[in-house]
Length: 587
Image 1 (cartoon, rainbow, N blue to C red):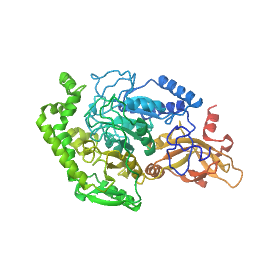
Image 2 (cartoon, helix red, strand yellow):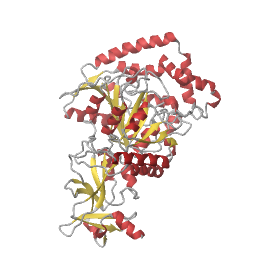
Image 3 (cartoon, rainbow, N blue to C red):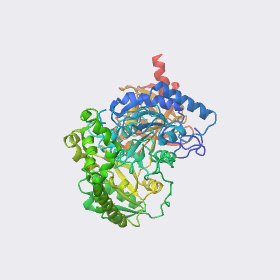
Image 4 (tube, rainbow, N blue to C red):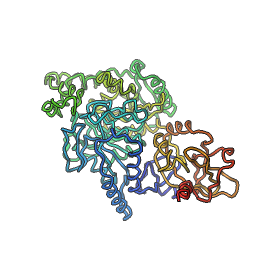
């Protein structure tokens, strides 16, 4: 282990000069880019969720790319996102990989990366594939795709959220460390909430949309998903800045940092009605937690903002979707119901009926609603809301595709229309499913929102595993499902003994001893607090969690075994670890 002053790392592999984590115990990842890539493909095969992907890059090609990155870093090159594995929503160009936007007939082969992708790759990110989406980024459900509906990460009978469905699920399942999405009406925030991860929606124009198939060109944003806020924000920072091509590109004008007692708005009670069961109580707990941290909470009637949100699909603004892909759908009407989703076609072609005069009337109405809505938020640094209103099943969306979808965007639709920054973060579990909240702020308040979100997200927990939960072992998937990220290979202090238990699947038991102990090999995984709680609650006897001392003196949570279960168990301490013991049996 290296000293705290040398490296602070997160998720997977981060350059040794990059500081992005605030956990109490710091670990330098020992994984090469090549190893991380191998883990990603292994995880992809293990979860067996083909509907997440539209195109997966050839593994040998990606391994070669990872080897080249490893060589560059070994030669002394600094890459701030070295070895981070990513997925890209399939309406964003990746050179050499088809862009379909969810339609085989629309597919084309880009020769250049979109600037957002190019900047990540330059920083050391490795792209392994393109992900499924609501076709032409039109939807918030993740089911409007001829490549199949993307099932929820936690419950496959429920939706994933959209339109950046595959990107969110690939992140939540631990296949990738980050993923790119897009957001026009909430597509980079709703799936984050339903999958229990972070969704960063930058201010419009901060990240170029060059190389992105437009949904509504003036509103579209490139977004980031991650399981960890700091990594998501770092990726957004890397992607930011005008490219000289996107006419809507903007130079960042960072808002002031949070003051000692920031003021945050929440909706008045009538605008929190209709939430899924238990969500109102979960939201109240987040509000109470923020208030306890020194945040001043004020209730605000957000009716003008919600009315403005209704204009995105209920007014002439939908004509911008028609301008983007309407001609393609119109000339391929024979594909509606097969390669072109029927609901998407209905929405996009419907915009052709809008008149210019209606657009300008709606534009004026939007401006007046925005002026009044934002006036009510004066003096606040952000509006805190649930990210969405419910988490329907696939069957519920199939029964009412437009009505079910419209409920999803209640709190998200107005953000881009009114030039707002926004950030979706996980905020616990309700009924066994993720619950998420969203902070919406002024343009260029992106970093300020992240500072505020750190008060919402409970600290991560570092957990030592020494047996069946190690990478490549049969129970490792449980850590991934809890949102865990591998941190480092470690050894305990020389105060422990390891035993082989008579369990199925085979597991070891770790016990601390007063004398005669040895250092035992293991791994440290970092889990979000909510995921750690679920994981611990599911542990069967005789396993439990206690404090474990590592060979560098740090103390972390770790698996400990009840003494009674060790009676008659084989002492395998001499092997130095579970992997070595299992290999000895195989040989």
